[in-house]
Length: 244
Length: 209
Image 1 (cartoon, chains in turn brown, purple):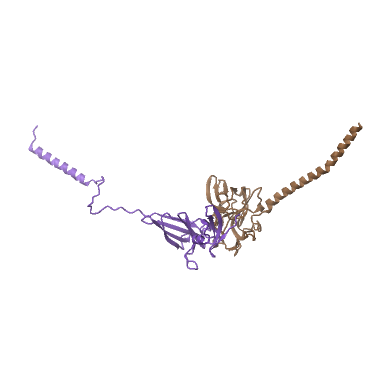
Image 2 (image 1 turned 120 degrees about the vertical axis):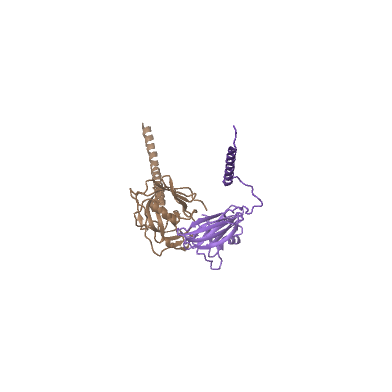
């Protein structure tokens, strides 16, 4: 009996000696999990395609007299883009579902209504930062916006005003704050080849047609948000940007 | 049965009328059967020459306001083609001739999709013959460059400045004055890309990503 009592006490003492270690280990694991989750979330939300301006300018307004800088060179907005025409479509002008596909491998965008191709043209995706892949929804359309980012240290800095026909997209993994969009690009003409910091660059002429066609339908004004009755068009991005 | 003289006369008249009718009809019917060409024909048959083959290529500026048109017309001998490069508003107004030339058959002259500089001030064309690229840059207003040259011959400058590299392609404009140039190495593997600066006429090697 005494032997049993001593043995139980010994076991209790032995167990007690393990408790602080287990607690510490559990705490460390919890902290690691927390930090890992926080880093993942932080990385997803902290990166913005336009690292300086991000999505600050959501007014959609034209800024007269402002062009910009791209890769250390001054660039001017073509006069033809200084006064974009008002969208002419009205809600409910088509019943077929709309879908925008971007193939990074071929650097091409194709827009569908149902099974019919509405338009198809070359684009420029991420050269200095990857363009995300997946299914996205357009969450805002802006007639103009300001984009600034890149790095002066490696000559990738840009500061571009009046970026025309911008349509920001997002999903559960790429939040709105990440600032990825389809937009017109007036500072280069090398479409069909990667040229962006993660967005999808489009020739202004093509961007205008896509902007007018895509949902949400704009009723005029510089900014259009989707509503349950007027949702943003689905955008699917697949493939891998070629290493050129 | 006896035939009278009167019967014979009527039969003769009927016979003459029939024969005359047949001869008349034959002479009025057009002869559809082919005839052999006669060497001593007063008006020899001439074969109209085929109209010369021609084609037209059009590329819009990125903002959709201007167009560049390349018209190719093969000459009657079929050994060479004439090329005329013009620029104008998309409506066709304000048309100006950018360049005219003749090239032997087997030369593929084209306007690349990204021909226009983003500010619509310059255009470039590519000609390929025997797998060798020729690239010319022009001012889109049709005027010569400040040094009097009608164009910048990017391909000649490339061979001068980068003699060990092979010009693979010029894909477009990375900014209003920088052409994006892709290369092969001497052993035909992919080489680095360059910018060609049209103002300094220099090639700037681009870092690999």
